[in-house]
Length: 512
Image (cartoon, rainbow, N blue to C red; front, side):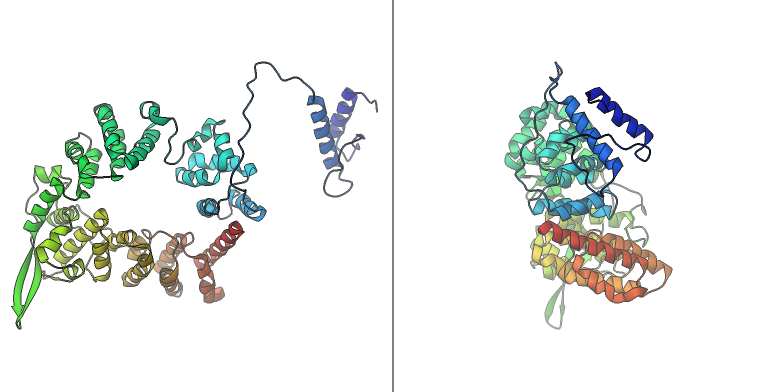
């Protein structure tokens, strides 16, 4: 073989074309021995070709007019352990893909970042999965942003989170999402300035943008916003009007609250009576008899009788009952402590003068919605503990988020035990965020175990849905309790156990 560079290269090309089974790779002094089994001629040929390629390119002057790419910045956070990186590789390849957000959030919580080699595939997933993007942003590190700056398909990562990037100019030049992020940040630090910025462009904004911008008022909401929100009740956009009424309903001391309180007290009154020398209080209910323009302006829509449907399939709610629920949901809860002179726990236990129980359901549903909207802990606690009558148990499930952290799991466990029927149970659990631990985990495991031992097709379908919901929220330690079902466990439970074991190993690896 001639020693010229061109001949050496052509000899390697010939060996590649003929195949290493027919021609051995040429000798190349100084080339590294390929890893793997000795005598692997194909690996040797490829490694030598890589060496030759590098030699041919070395020493060439850079082409003129080419912009030099800035190097990736250094990282503050350490990369995840190798075993955790290997599991992420498996997840991205499709194994237990649903746990990917949890993996990313757990990595970020431990101050770790994604390995650089896996960033392109991860960023590509974020293109089509918007819900995954915040988790990617937390775990991608500085190199993730560096890559996103060089690929417009990954630009979503630039300025992800509360900082839209670009400073104050983003309000004039940014996308809707960037402007929302800017306004949200300003509302958190200076609500008045945010309101003034929005007022300058409000009339020129399209209705979808006005609705998105108005939603930022939930941050730093005060009575100073009342005038702006009252004006928005007259907006030509339906979503804008509804948002304005929802925000006003959360605003203590507003004229909106006083209007709703007057309507509510015309429908719900206290009746006292004497029984064996004791004064007893009951609640009398008379739903509104008509719907007028003022009620519609304040966010209570008109619908024909029978068009209001609860989520449980028990049939429609009458128009008058639905109006009552909406009015109560928008009434300040202080209205009732003033009217009855009692704390919330005693109020929710008062007897409702109602022969068929429908009025009690309407009142309790209205109060539950109001407690959620007003984030009232005392009322949330009272409604969850008071044995109220509702036809929408998921409305009570929403109140769990209002409770202090230490009370949520026990209250959720009690709610699950109280709910009767799998359809209601699933709707309740959908509103209980993970992780499900302690008493709540025990209640879920008991429900799963009971359902697994009922062989009917209806129970099997409900069990499958419940397992799919639990696989990302249930504490992984629950796997050992579910394994007590043995080999006869339904397929859905077996798959749930596999996922829980996977998650348990995953979290431990990230904590190393």
